[in-house]
Length: 89
Image 1 (cartoon, rainbow, N blue to C red):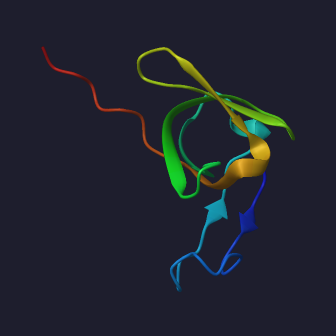
Image 2 (image 1 turned 135 degrees about the horizontal axis):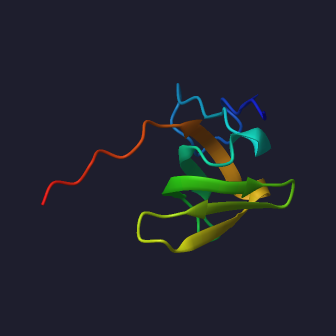
């Protein structure tokens, strides 16, 4: 498991914000929330099932079945989240 704290790394981040990566390769199959830095600046969030996590690439399956591939170097925070609630029809 990768566990990093990135508190205060960039001056553009609000003070007091602490980003932690508490998910890694051994968590495949678990639902996660992931925050990544975007090329144009800012951050993007992703929620889904972790398929794989390597030094280069993180793959997450979204609820709609699509697979998002994220460069591992852009991940600033990740954590396990509870399973999605059952949908009622």
